[in-house]
Image 1 (tube, rainbow, N blue to C red):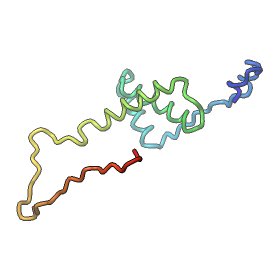
Image 2: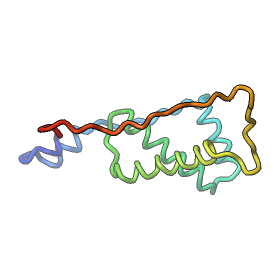
Image 3: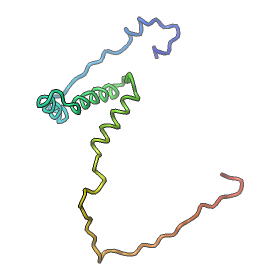
Image 4: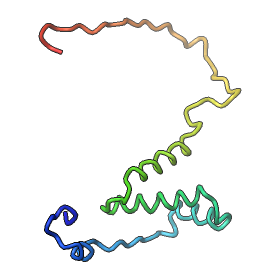
Length: 120
């Protein structure tokens, strides 16, 4: 709201902003895993990206606006790609078992859409 005020004083904007407090629950499984990852390899890029994303997620869930929403979206997409890689594809060499006695032929009918006159 203060950002959109045309007559607003920029110094009052800083006064009106909420103070950010980032509280950490050290017992949470995410924090335990991140702590272990950072202790074992402080330069681990994936752990550093996860910490950065955790901060951004806390920022958004607390009602703050991220400085760069597009960058936050990119981080989320990247983490989703890492988390989901290989989840829905069959591993190489894996064959799905097929039960021949339970297979029933299916019938399908293709229905073309009908256009009514005057409506689209």
